[in-house]
Amino acid sequence: MRLSIFITLSFLLCTLFCQCNGDIFVEEFAPAATEYTLNGDGDSITIQFASGDWDVSGGYFSSYQPYTWTICDVIGHPVKVDEQPHWEGLGKCLYDDFLLSVEITRDQYNKLYIKTHENAYKDSISLTLTISNSFATQLIKIHITPATRYQLSRIEYQLSDFSHETIEKKHGYGSFYNVSNVPTRWGIHVFQNRYNQVWFESLWPAQILAPDTQVEIPCYHPNEVPPLTLSQQKVTYSEEYQNLPLSYSNLMEWIEIPPHCTQDVYTQITYDKVGVFYNLYAINPKTGKERLFSGTFYSRAPRQTDYKIIQETIKK
Image (cartoon, rainbow, N blue to C red):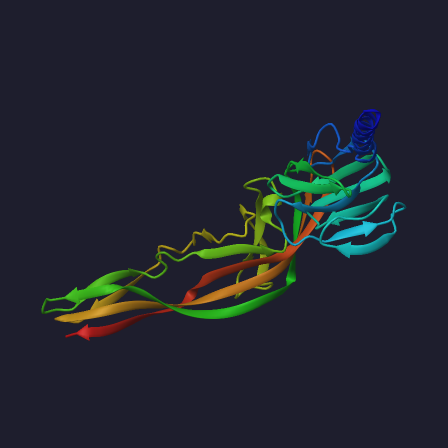
């Protein structure tokens, strides 16, 4: 009987000891909150963890691939470059793609400091960090709102150094029928539906600027010196093609269609395509930060005096 009681008590003591062991060695480390929002104009937060038994083991953004993180020691000396933020113990890492800049620092074992220097993209971006140890994993989400849109400070064109290309284009105008016994005359608007087409090309998206930002553009005059000068005309700074009306769009030429004849009429027009390098300076009105964007402005416009009308008889 005594032996049976001894065995039962021993079993209960072992069970209690094992339970206590689990509580002691599997220590909770997750912070009180796991989701935060930071301002894209520059913001920071220090996350307090329940313990220091964890490492930064990975992370990813909601968009804007690819990622390149610079991982440093706790002093800030670069150690390696990786696609994800991860290191053991104390340290820090930096992400910067010119428009988005984020810094993550762990200089105390139970704290993680996250700073957003700027999110110049037009959309919010989410950063998900993986925090883990041998027993558990915790995700930390950081939502970074867009920064204040930049305002145009000035734009500078290198007017003395530009590219030029001459392009010949043949456009269908229409078919004309003359069933009479005498020639008939028709008025042709040579530049009907023709425009000065302009656009901007840059490595950096135009959306960083305030919507509908207006900038002055150059104008090309092939028979003048200098041929490229800054005009008073303004357009929206955009990567999209913009069609600007021509001052000579109503220019008319007369053609004659012979009796009992059907003709297809075409206009053959010479275009000047010009490309000029520019520097655009913009400033964040909230933070005062100034940025420089470089690119090329293009225009493609028909020459007013370099065209001809082609008449092709298809039935007589």
